[in-house]
Image 1: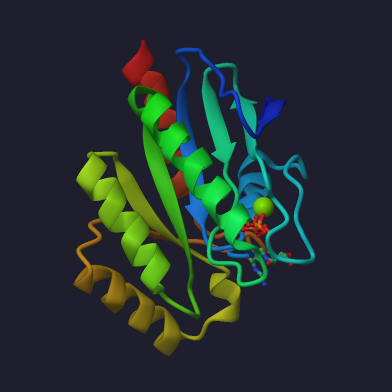
Image 2: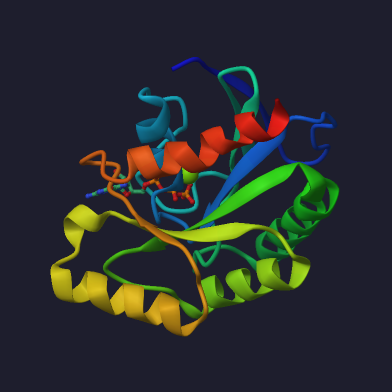
Length: 188
Ligand SMILES: Nc1nc2c(ncn2[C@@H]2O[C@H](COP(=O)(O)OP(=O)(O)OP(=O)(O)O)[C@@H](O)[C@H]2O)c(=O)[nH]1
Ligand SMILES: [Mg+2]
């Protein structure tokens, strides 16, 4: 698959008309790993310590759609200022890029299920009218009971579509790529 790193953004965001899919979720939930699994190469940095991805990292896939890796939320060890700047960056990103966003993948750990912050994120996307779906990550680490519980909880908070994934085992790759590639059909 053809993929190219377009840049890292902390302030000024790109101003083009290319469609994008966005990966959001708690720090350490597996956003960067999932991007790497999808494109088949280690293009996004995977952190040993959570809270590693500080900027918005943008990758161009097959010349027509962008994958956007945004900094994770909910990491306890960040200062109030850092949390504020994260919020500011996210608000700007979703406001400025709203019309380009094809889908937001809200990543949730299969074993942990949706946290309060995930719920707020989903509610906020719903309120803004931004298309989104839930992606359960690291399914290789969760047993059937944990997985069912996470699915049930997502249903309870009104999530319509869920894709179960494991970056380690390649699970969910086809389903995610299908959502991503649908942008192509929309463009032509
Ligand atoms: N077992 C297992 N581990 C995973 C999987 N995906 C990611 N990990 C591990 O989880 C940790 C965090 O992964 P990242 O991809 O860096 O997570 P992130 O969401 O990008 O984290 P931030 O950039 O800090 O927000 C790393 O140690 C990964 O190796 C998976 O599918 N299975
Ligand atoms: Mg990351």
